Amino acid sequence: MKIKYLGLLVFIVILALVAVPVSNYFVKLKIEKALQNLPKHVDVCTKGILVDVVSGTLEFQDVLISVSDESSLEKVLKLNLKSILIEDIAYLEFVFKNKVRIEELAVDAPKIKYYKAGKQKKPTKAYEIPESPEVTIKNVQITNGAAQVLSLQNDSLLFDIKMFKLNVKDVSHKADKKNRIPVTFHDFDIVADSIQLNVGDWDRLFIAKAQLKQHTSVLKAVQLKTKYSKKELSKHIKTERDHFNLGVDSIVINEVDFGFKQDTIFYFTTNKTELHHLDFEIYRDKLVGDDPTIKSLYSKTLRELNFDINVKELQVLNGKITYEERVHSSGVPGEIFFTDFNATMSNINNTYAEGDKTVVNITTNFMDEAPLKAYSDFDINNKNDRFIFKAELGSFHVEKLNQFLVPNLNVKFEGVLHKTYFTIDGTTNHSSIDLITDFDGLRIDVLRKHERKKNKFLSAIANIFVKKTTENGDNVFAEAKRHDIKRDKTKSVFNFLWLNVKEGLLHAKN
Image (cartoon, rainbow, N blue to C red; front, side):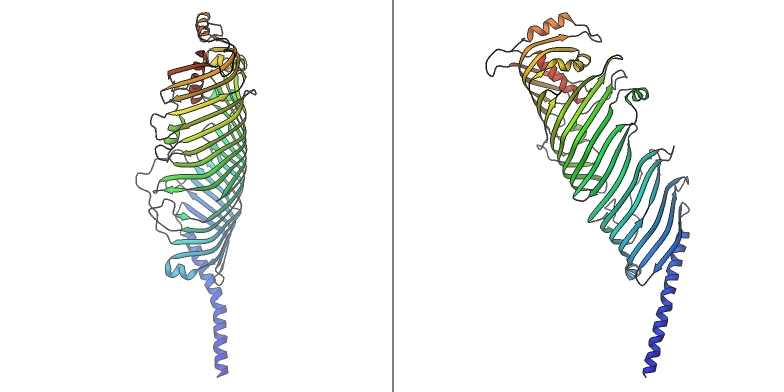
């Protein structure tokens, strides 16, 4: 009897020893056959496939994936991978429940090249999710990755990451026609170095290092730069546009949430974002042809975004902003600048209800001399784009502005503004300003248009209304109230503010 059971046990052991390698062989054979039967525009090559049905492990070694356009057969994607390791596959769930459950998916050294075509037509029919099994992966890990996006037309570099690694927890995919991207996850950690990205035709974004997490993300050494030098840009453009050089030491983004709502609407939400040590240089060559396009106020720009945004608070800490304009072929461009620039912007949001507001508070030093405080608010639901802008300026020698005012507003100032307050109440079409100031020796010269010569007649009229010095004594200010100041919609928001301040100073009187 014992011999009978012993024989049965030996038979089972032998059967198991034979069944495991046989099962491994047939699973490997099935995978190889599936790879050979892929569509013609998809090609997958691998130097080795290792299968272990007992442990539920599957490994692909030295993988090359090539994808071409289905109609033109032009290259679209090229992907090299050192290895793909899949651990603890639940085979029974896949066979009997059409579900794929994986404990670990590890991808080593993926090198991705994606070739992007030009502008493509929008699909005429609604997006449809193809039928596919439900997939859950406990942990996805990618190490030593690199990625590039190139133009299909000329092979130029559009996007580049020298190195990235990724870890995502609890990834779940379930085909659902209600969700454009039917993938969910509970946590993620992405680290990337040396990122470059084309931003339109003229500018390029650089990020030295990025770490993206669900609760806090940090971008280090961020730069947004125009591809050309100031001189070269003017040769390439027909109408004026800004030359940018924006640098930020670090950007900290807290509590990020993003995704798609109602199948199509992308949304982005963050509780707080901080920009540390911002240095923003803006240059415009006014010798290039005018740009006649309508410039929207910030409320309209925010309202008309094609995605939902909700930044509850944005802080700019210890920044500097410089703006230059070249108006004459000879001479130095006019310049104004703000140092020790600190700003808090609340409720940058295009989904809030009517009556709520976006609010901006700024403290800075103007032209390395005068402390400046500013406040602004607007409601994105107001179709007239009404806004309020208030400012308080400390003691300031106004001749410092002449390098900018002379070419831009055709006026020249002399004197000292000891203290200046103003409120601008504006819409997309018009504005009014209420300005009060305490000054000494204020003089205004109105210049001839397109010349630097003084217009004696207009200057004399302007100075009749402007008192040279406010009266002695406490709380004595000159005041100006100007209404129906017409906005030139082809000019910037900044130009609109300057136009109001100019009107206020020209008509300030006791």
